[in-house]
Length: 147
Image (cartoon, rainbow, N blue to C red; front, side, top):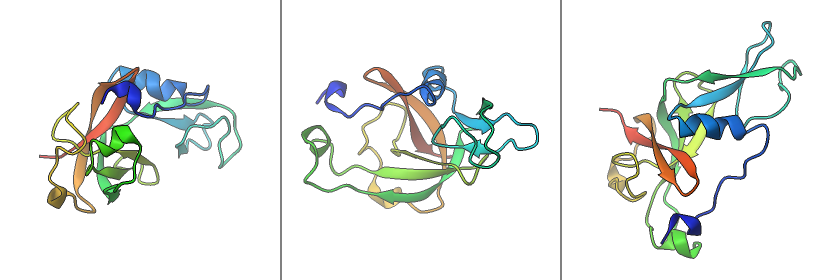
């Protein structure tokens, strides 16, 4: 399996800064730049759903969170993914922004295989920290258990 066999993110104008920051190993989330609002939002979009402002900025997050949910996909899967099964897919609730949740994989270290963590170690509420790994053309956020 090569990284070119995996599905790649679709980058649009609103989400491009997210990927530019991950390439710098920074986790940032789009926020409303209206001083009377300031709400964080993900996925990125052109307009604030709270105040309808089109002004936005990207706020740096600590990269800490907790596992909100997880799943172990089972075949039938796309061929590139079937080779890695069983692996985990987790939903992480950010500590800095509890209403923001990101999807990724829990790994033993940045760039480790998606199936590198023993499934028995995944627990709802477990504290995690973001790490970054280059996969194909993208630097992807991955997650490790906090020590």
